Length: 223
Image 1 (cartoon, rainbow, N blue to C red):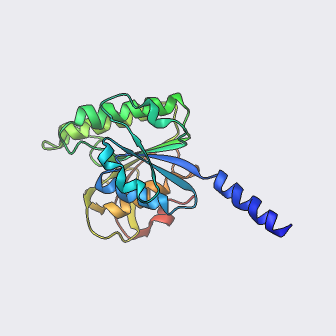
Image 2 (spheres, one colour):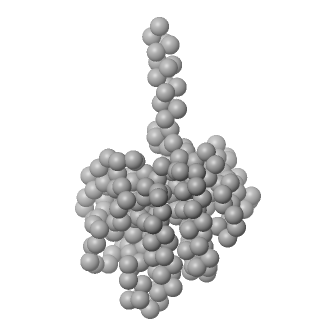
Image 3 (cartoon, helix red, strand yellow):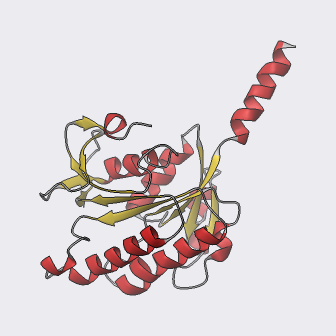
C-alpha cells in the first residue's frame, strides 16, 4: 500500500512538470537556461533551434528539441508547450526580422494555443531607444516586441537586463521596475532570473530591470 502511494505521488509530480519552450536555446544565455530547466523539478526544457546540427548537443542529454526558424512559421513549435522563454537574438544582424518580428510571431503563436506565461529577455534602454545612438535600432526592436507582448492576452514577465557578461554568476541581483542607472550582469544570473519568473505567482505582467547586485535572486523574486 505504501509503495502504491509513493508511486502515485511520483506520477503526480511528473504530471505537473511544465513544458518550457526556449527560443534561442543554442545561444550562450539560452544554453544556460536550458541547463537550469533540465535540472529543475518543475520544468521540462524544449530547446528551439534553427538547424539540425544544433539538435545533437541537447539530444545527447535527453533534452527534447524542436526545429523552428523565427524568420519562418513557428506555430508548430508551441504544440504541447506550457510556457515560453524568449532569449533569441540576431546578434545585431537582423534586429527587425528576428528580435522584433520573430518575437511577435512566437507571442502570437503562444497566444493562439493559450500558453500560461511568456517570459521575454529584453534589454535596459528599450524604454528609450532614441537615447542610444549605437544601439538605437536594436533597442527599438526590443521595445516593439515588448509592447506587442503587453498588448497580447498572455500572462507575461519582461526582464530587461544590463550589459551581459560571461562572469560566473553570484546568484545576486539588483532589480526594479526602473533602476535609473546602467550596469552589468552575468549570463548565469540572467538565466536564473528568467527561470525564476516562470513560476505562476512570480512577477505577473511586470517589466523589470536587472543588474548585478547584493540581493539573492530568490528573495528579489519571491514565488
